Image 1 (tube, rainbow, N blue to C red):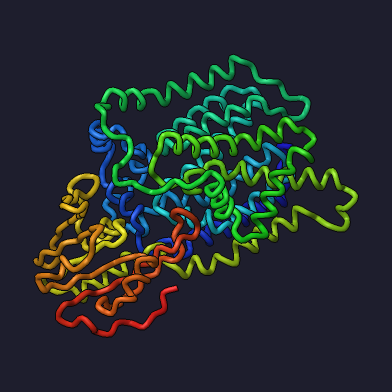
Image 2 (cartoon, rainbow, N blue to C red; image 1 turned 30 degrees about the vertical axis):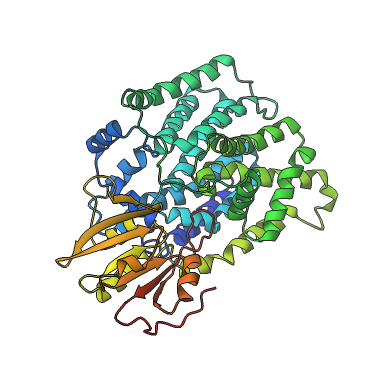
Length: 515
């Protein structure tokens, strides 16, 4: 099982080359989107400054490892490139690692898994995104690889490396905790005859080593916790039902309905066709229980933050390997049909085809063209103009591309609440020696033009449809964001820019249909 054929090695190297080209192409050509602006701000500080920040903010949702790694490219002279170098490197390296991991389960699924990841548009997008998800998935696969190597060899080094990569996962994202817990089910996974069953001592050793590597950070956070809020009070998203979240995870990972249906069926029938049904159930439980459990946990605690498939990317390798193991089991059971139909080959074609059809659209589209919008504003702003952030998410990106960086880790805004439950945020900044202010309010927009000044309004598609119906709001610009990996993949985060000018209320804007 551990013998690598020359043909397989060449094929993996070819996948690595193709995967790199697909992930490198246009990776630095797109505007930063708002979460990448947060990465920019969080990564400006070195190790000492990071420790000082977490001492004051122990409940910050993201641990520091990814920010410390990204800081190595500071100062960010070209942030669209430098913030994405770590994801690009580890996203590309995930291809051969996935091959090695899949071989631990079955040599028959290693190449299909590798080819599928190479052309997966979703993973390509994460490899071009200045966030920690590509790195997290890489660490997760390496962790599983060493875990399985220990289960097969009983050698001490793989067990030590497993605990070390658990710690790297923990310090990269707290969302890895369900993975760290659920992966303990692998202790019950049984390989072919000839491998020793693990002992209780090895289990305790792994847990002890992991705690040794992780507890210092946990103790540091605990000692500095002084009833700071865990959730950002500005997060007021609706979580959604369990079924809807699982549906969109499946939609993101297996684009287009035929691939979704085929994947769901293959996962369902795996225990029925697998020779070792216990192993099949364990493999399914490895990713299904923590995903469902985390969603129910958030609902129980009334956590008001959306859940996206990106938060579960660490489970994707298990998800895809389960599908190909199911296909392999079906082919073994129905071996008499192998001459006429090859189910694995058909699924590979379906998987690649479903991704290749959306890949050109991904390359052509922006994630969230804040840079383009700010470039437009720079050439059209007049003294006294105001900006209205209609969806309350663009302000950090607007400030970033105006060259206004926060004094600390994040921007501070002024907040006020008036009679009638009217809430307003505002953030002022200077550009070319002129003072401008960005607003958001649940009441818009006449109060901002009562003094005769002009108001620029940046909104998403849903709000744009409403503004376009009123002729007083002049539609001045569209800035693409049709392929953002946000609440789902893709999310249309395009920006529509309107101008409300009291001195010329019926000026004609651009003629563009908003669907």
